[in-house]
Image (cartoon, rainbow, N blue to C red; front, side, top):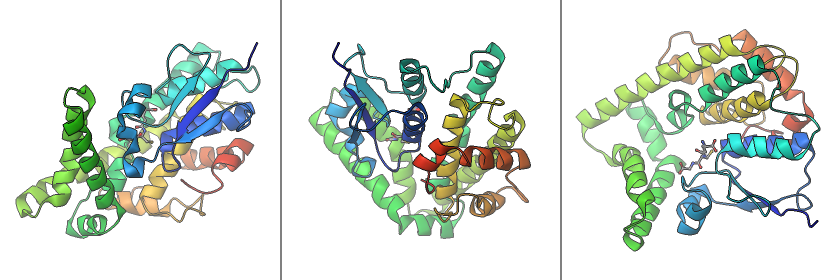
Length: 288
Ligand SMILES: N[C@@H](CCC(=O)N[C@@H](CS)C(=O)NCC(=O)O)C(=O)O
């Protein structure tokens, strides 16, 4: 039987693509031999290309297509489980119901909107933070998306994706265009609230993590969702990418909203443990 052709749609700056790359490394899949990578440049808003929406109707990264699958996979959770099912070595989905449930709780937490790393990348709590993001890549990124969405919407007015996404991206687009003090104040207050929720999410993770790994003695799917999320949060907060174990930028960014916030000792210990694994070292030689 001919081998299935697997294509992974990825982007270097995509945190959730990290789940897939960790899985590929852990299970021993070899690039070009077992799978191919197709880059989708989120910075150029190529994830909004109608051809890509045929593969992933949410316009998100990652996706996976395989000649042996009836339809593309468009969620990192499903992609990990599919790749895990293809090979018996290093199983990532816990067999024990208790561990599986606990892992799912952790996965749901890091995928929840309360701890979306975009809060740290794009929200702003005062004029200084907003001006900083306006003069940095963030404004270019938001503008590029909005213009691409407008262009695609004009060309494909009946396509259901573009209207919804224009509204969603439009919230940040407006906040970044805005010159009205009262609207700024509302944005700052919302952003501050989001940071408080983000801190609560990190505290929740602290209490959920078993040790040495997320749900106990084995590396499992939960670890592979938390790693890229936490790494991306550190990058968003301005960490030096080569300082993998330095949480100070993340802590001080959050402390502006939550006095004295610290990444907890269990989270730190968990991070030190996962950072010693070869899959981590392969995919995260530096934070991304
Ligand atoms: N639930 C999805 C989330 C994927 C996701 O949001 N990916 C981000 C990049 S890490 C994305 O594609 N964002 C593009 C956008 O929202 O326009 C998954 O786990 O695969």
